[in-house]
Length: 386
Ligand SMILES: [Ca+2]
Ligand SMILES: [Ca+2]
Ligand SMILES: [Ca+2]
Ligand SMILES: [Ca+2]
Image: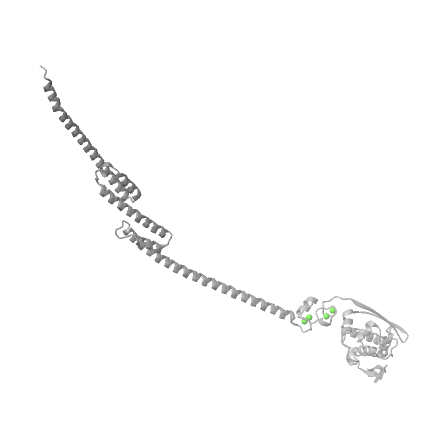
């Protein structure tokens, strides 16, 4: 038979069991969950440490801060201290890394002393301490190398400067010598140009201008020295002369020509007061004329002195043979070419022609006249023509 009391009693017994079961399940579940969370946290901490090992402190800190909010950490306090410690270590390392990186940048900038100063700021217990020490040594080495390089460079510069200076001096010396040589050449040229090698009174420069030689006093071989020659290099014209006179009823003619240079030669000669220097028996032209007249006289047995006198008197414009002499004495060639002259000029001409024929003469000077004495050996006499 159905007993409701028993049924209620049974139900009463089952409730605590159920609660117990529920509690147990809950505890187990929480336990499992916590276990899982703990495991997860440990794993994350491990990962954060790995990041720290890779010097990714930022990421490690972020990860650790995230882990700090995990249930087991936040509510149960599990691993909280470890995480906080890790965060602190990572923060210090991050700070040191920054210093280390800045110091490395200074090395890259070759600012070695500043790099050393920055490296030295890292404490002995820093992760970067040893690395920093190595870098400090490296930086010191770089400083020494730099100094050596600078010394070397300064030495090279000094050597280069010395070399440049030596080249400059050498070039200057060369220029100076060139100038000296140029000057010496110029002086030598000037000396040569101003010299008169043949002593004819014309410098080399002047002879070049005239077209004559400075090693020949008579470049055109006409008997006139270069400095007294109207045409020293040759050329010029001949002056034709034709004479006609009577001697003892016979008409005598004589044609000749004389180069203008001869005429000019005498024309240019300085004038001294009258005297024997105007008698020019050695003049080649006078000689030629004398020879012709002598031959003519000999052929016809003429009296040479008188024959010559006739010739001189026959000169067209020497009609007034006895005129007074003036202040301007002429050389025989001038009188011959100009065909006039006073008694003095004709005396010189006559005396020159006679002497050119080998006969002695004497000039006879009167108070206002002049005449020529001819030594006529074969006649044992001297005739005076005046
Ligand atoms: Ca000369
Ligand atoms: Ca000359
Ligand atoms: Ca000459
Ligand atoms: Ca000449």
